[in-house]
Length: 111
Length: 113
Image (cartoon, rainbow over all chains, first blue to last red; front, side, top):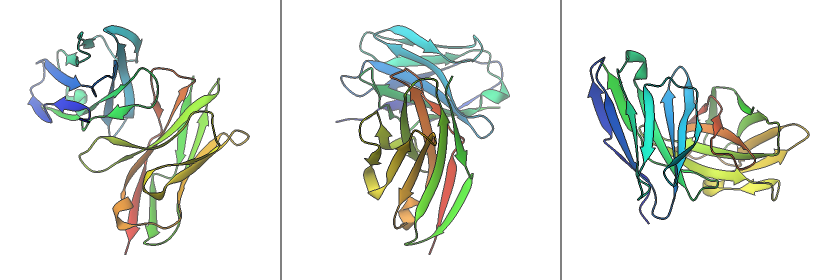
């Protein structure tokens, strides 16, 4: 059974640009969550989608957005990148209930 | 609101010694609790979970944790450390069956030969 797949694994962007990260959940999982991991702030919840509907959102500015497609794949977008957006972005999937299975993450570096 | 406190950002143990990682939580409703492990440049791997069943939870790789409501704790233990246990460990809580996890700051474990 394939795990949670995140692409790309590494990304370098320039300040002011935008970026889109992708997450393919485990087959049959309809919930996808996104987390940001930084050395200073640790692991912080961004948002969660279930069957294309956002059910919960963390305390991040509007530059961070996401969506989920009918096949449960999810994307998150960050616009007008800032240096502080450099982080490991983790995606997790579940059937809609705990526990959550995490992907290997996308390492975003903003220069 | 829920939160997690992990006591000790770094723990160093000798190979074969007991591993004890401390986690205290706060939650306004009965919580679901988790321990995850993260190896360098990887995502989070679930070690074990507490979802209101047995208070002593056994996980993978010989780890176990005990839910103590009176102490609001969910400490992780392993009787005998192995070199492969060197990693960062995160305790997480979600209230009931919520849609988001609140994580502790993490504890880095190093294992001495």
